[in-house]
Image (cartoon, rainbow, N blue to C red; front, side):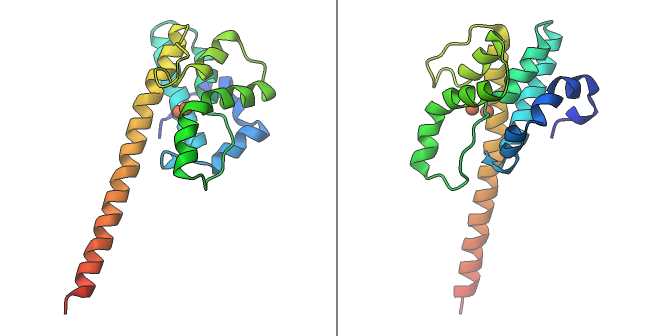
Length: 167
Ligand SMILES: [Fe+2]
Ligand SMILES: [Fe+2]
């Protein structure tokens, strides 16, 4: 995972948010083969670093990135529910985040528009574009790792079946 823990400036920005009782709940929710908490921190930290390099508002970027997937869901969702969530979760994340924190217009926009173009909400700020792009890159990496593991698992099962069926 990212080396965000040794970045004290970053930690001081997100500390209040990650220690929130409800935000802590996403530590136990599966997301792209890891936890939603780990995914959120990754998106937040990489977006923060890019925003810093581009001299943008890195504090709000860290917060918006952290909260972009802040919604509580069951680990036992059906495939249909997961597909529906692709379209509905930005709104849900925004509602959840607004209940817990006072958000700026920019932070709200980062959450609302992070699924663009799947979701029709177009990012209004450069920081929102960064979160949206970083989220896609991070998600692709996470899903490819998850998929590879499944292929390996299925291959091992097939191999075991084949070996056990040889007389
Ligand atoms: Fe998302
Ligand atoms: Fe995400």
